[in-house]
Length: 484
Image (cartoon, rainbow, N blue to C red):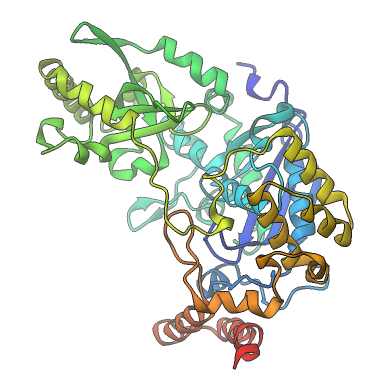
């Protein structure tokens, strides 16, 4: 039996889940954070369950409300978002821990990064600093579906396997753990599924190693090579949830190199989706270029693993046809490589500060020390510290923080952003607030319109109606009445 070396230097695992006010990573907030810390053998050590009050400028999504069913009125144990984010940052940054859950890499992890950014905490240290690592059971489940299919029972929805956590839990766990989309229940489901999956120790070892950056990088040296115009290119099998059921969540790919600007990103050309010769121009080939970061899905495997996949014959046929075409048209491969290795993300105009996580360079050591001092200072001292800040972004972030949590401390600050609570709230009504993708922050009016549409479109239970009514009253009282 192989030793699971991915966990060798891991003191424990923090399994966590978020329930949020909506799906906007830049503008929504967590309403619940739950975590269970375990040993590498999944023996439970500690349970954490945090309820979080709504922050003043958050407009909750009625669709999210009907999923997680968390009442707008906070429980007596709920704490402010500022206190919650401080605790969460500490929890997932414990030295030598691995943190993750179910679909955390695609949603929860990025959601928290934006939360940390807004609250002046380092958004990335939980990924790499002090022995911290990340893990996600969702892509691991997909790996098991392909390569250890008998380990789990696969629930069928519309004649297709469902990989939703609640459906997998119903099909595989002996007892119901409670209402899905309760953060703590989802964490318990995730751990119990992982315990079943660990029964195949070899598969568990192989897939968890793929979350280790150094191991992931080392595997490229084992991939076979092909010659195209006197140059060698490695090729492998990429496995990812985004590739979809029709493609067996996998693709035979050719490496086209590392990105010229994003140094942690490698690019792979999917060779089994369609004939490359059918594309009219290079720009259209964007749909067959797959981006990969080391230590994260897509998982990079030896191409021989395709022999365990049901659609292997079609994959191999397309791969060979496209390889031949590239060998006959090496100038096309060079053009594809150069085009996508140099393509950068388009920066949106008028992006709100809360959404500028990816546009702003990391703070310097000195600026991080200022952030630490800011967090440990009482409100009035925070305001005095803001007055001394020269960094314009950090200054604006700090003022927003004070406006949200300590508005009384803003009186001493001479800055356009330190205007009254009422003026700041009015901004939510008067102009579009855009995130990094160009999407608008949910407005109170849009929320009320969506509530009306839900009432007309859906067959709501009495509990649903009560939740929606409570939200409607909250929107009117909190956002509309002060300005009527």
